[in-house]
Length: 179
Image (cartoon, rainbow, N blue to C red; front, side, top):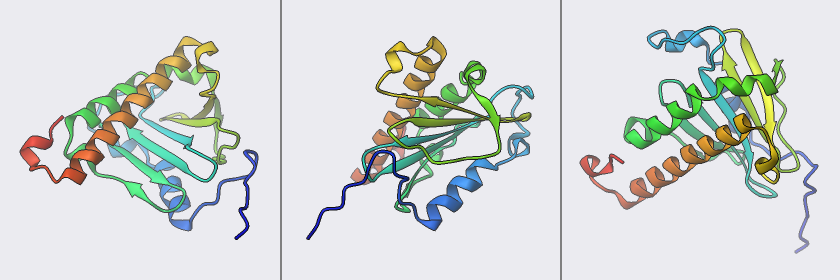
């Protein structure tokens, strides 16, 4: 069996389910969060495309209400953790409320390409539009403080989601699941 190697510059293979879910997340209107107070120029949602290997792309979706979900290019997903785990809600909210300063490094966009070459694409959702910026994890230590801070914060969300996933797999009773 021949092994087909994928160049880091090639687009990721994706399923229609993944594209549809990602697109839906990128178009959730601020009215969804009308019970939450935020200004028109403040971020209410952060969508992050995270290359995780030569064939795996994850998209992490976080909103101001603490919702946080993961979607994978192969159609897999991990959703609903924020309804069970305070640690996920806290990490997601912390990311979103601290993402507004990152807008200065982004450009308003209505186009949402997938990343290549290991670069993380971040889409910052505001009432005034969506702003796209990038973070290269290989050089994050040399990037501006705002990028380093947001990178750290979304790693915290990823860690909270992973712990929630492990607890789900253990089948712990609901009362013990709160992190």
